[in-house]
Length: 199
Image (cartoon, rainbow, N blue to C red):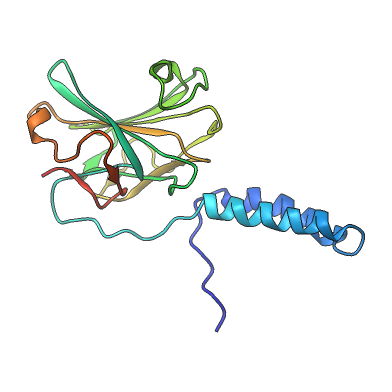
């Protein structure tokens, strides 16, 4: 039986098509180059994989796969930041049900996502009334792809976008939660749409 074709984030197959297309005419002329192109195409598909997730029935879930790097109070809100490595799934998900009030793109730099200066990087922020999710570009991850628009109703764990080749995703929790309510800690690895960050 042939293996199932993986579910891939939007744009993944389009990016992979380029090295696959180059591989075809070079198979006979330059087999090593053709092999390298095939491997590059497979790597792009793997980077854009989009596996199904099973969200819990309640709570706020992680918006990204990766490692929690920050649990920090900001005024009367708490921010939980997750850095995605190149090995993680790069599809981002809604932490909780809500209505998208706005999707805002902010131009900026492309510094490493795990550094303090990444706070000035390019970003896209989803304002969902009670909470916000911010996808932040990094040194290599320079393309943020929102998949929902203002006015959209989202469910817990629903796909809201992806960052090609990973980077960082922050969730700003509602004011009724404080740091003691957060169920994840810095350094912990989480899964988008499944790991509960606030019950």
